[in-house]
Length: 231
Image (cartoon, rainbow, N blue to C red):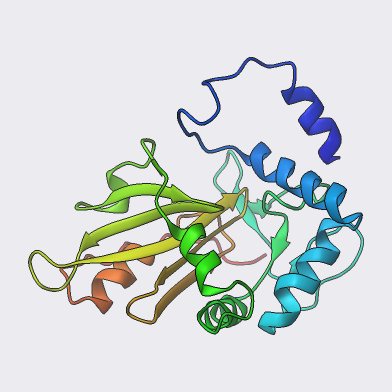
């Protein structure tokens, strides 16, 4: 449960004085879940449905629970020690740090709802997207020419050269992954572009290559991994 996770964190020393630095932490999202539930007196997943999913028309998105069956939901896979694909185990007990399901169609609907101001007002989105701390942990795998920051609830905000030398565009997004699944949701607000990539074999998605194609930049297609045939 979320309370027990936070309780274990309380016995650990701070890594830095709050407000002086930044580091990614799943526990931070769990704390936000508890704050929402304490302030409203309602479960997090009910709030998510009411405040985000319904206004955005996201009918194929929701929290994952142990018992209910989600129609058409893909199975996540990981490779066992012998190289074969096996079903990925995962825990549904805490939701705010990523235990949810969605589709690329629904993520596009979220982008459109944000543009229309249906989920957050333009002024609140400006506050959410504003760069606040440099992300030092993202390496060159995100491509050259990027700077990395965080906003409220966003993993990173990137500025990278545009199609003309010296140009730049702002990319706002968040990605995540766990055993068997990974995702990336990138938006280019000034250009009306959204890139949503989901997969169920645990390998990183391809938003950088898609980004380069859209902005007529040099790109290299990744190699396709060999997958074992289904038994």
